[in-house]
Structures are given as C-alpha cells and as structure tokens.
Image 1 (cartoon, rainbow, N blue to C red):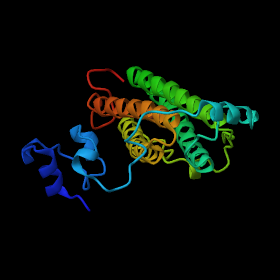
Image 2 (cartoon, rainbow, N blue to C red):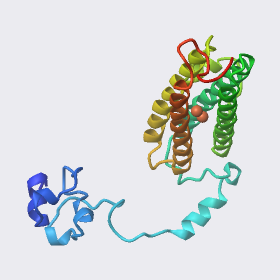
Image 3 (cartoon, rainbow, N blue to C red):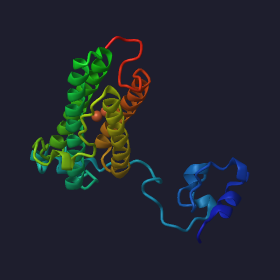
Length: 237
Ligand SMILES: [Fe+2]
Ligand SMILES: [Fe+2]
C-alpha cells in the first residue's frame, strides 16, 4: 500500500496543523517522525536500514578490511563518495582559494599605495584566511589519496571565481564581494553534493562557507566606508 499525506495524518492521529513543514510524501520515514513502530501501522514497505533497526557493527569484518590496502590511509572501503570526483571538485575549490589569495594580495598592496590603510588591512586579513582555506582543502585532497593541483597553468579555468584587479577602492571591494558571492554559491553546491557520503569533506566545506559569508558581509560593510570617487570617507587620501 502506498501511504500518502492523508494516510500519514490518519495513522498519526495528529491534527494536520501539527505536521511539520516538510512532510515526507510516503510513510517510509514517518514512523521515525511520529515515534510509531512499523508493526502498529501495518506497513508493508521494506524496512529502510538507514532509519530502522539497532546500530550494529561487524567489527570483525571492519578490522579485517582495515588491514587491507593500508597504504590508502584514511580511505577505507566504507568511503561512500566517488573519490575521483570529490578530488576533482576539491581541486577546483583549491584553485578558487588560490585565485582569491592572489586577488586580495593585489588589492592589499594597491590600496596601501593609495593610502587606504584600513581597507588594505582588511584585504590582507582575507588573503591570509583564503590561504588557510587553500591549506585545508589541499590537506583533505592528500588525505583522500589525491594530488592537490597547485599548477599555475589553467588555474583560472579551474577556479570558480575570477581575478579582477579593479582601478579604484570601490572597484576592488566590489570585485572581492562578487568573488565571495560566487564562492558561497559554488561551495553550497559542493556541500549538497557531498551530503552524507563524505562527512569530513562536507564539514570542512561548511566551515569554509561560513567564513566566505563573513567575508562577503565584510566587503558589503567596507563599501559604505568609501565614497563614489573611491576615497575613504572621513579620511585624507
Ligand atoms: Fe576562502
Ligand atoms: Fe573569502
């Protein structure tokens, strides 16, 4: 029997208004949702191993497999994602971070040259943090038994963001804001792709994403400190 919205409401004995916003379309997941056993609602669909039954580990088998392919380090047969694809995706994120370091460094020294010292300091801090992201991603690629790609050739093609120099302070800040917004979108996609198949890479990308969001907010705030001619407000340039 196929369980739809009405059947779930009926079986739950709850009011429609008590249902959560995102309701599963079948009763496949609903016993967990409502704390009912499958038997009590006479469910005929096969049990879902991810949501039903006790947590069991075949520790003997796991120990045996751990001894095989020991040269692969952290990559065990339990790794659920497509490793080659994850390494490719992470190398694109690595290229993105390197391009961001280069762009922020260029902006740091150009802003300092036009005596916009507080803006230059902000660019410098972001450059350092982007370098930190690049290091995290490269380390994870290595952990996945892959090779981090630091080759300058094709760097811009691999990267999601662009390298734009900008002539004025406003140009620079806007370019950085756009690059951050691109990273936010592409990293969100990567996180969705990784899902539960590679939790370590996903958690790393989530951490980086939260920092890119802070960077974007910083750039938005910084724009307000610069006038239309590209000079710092309330400062002699
Ligand atoms: Fe970054
Ligand atoms: Fe960033």
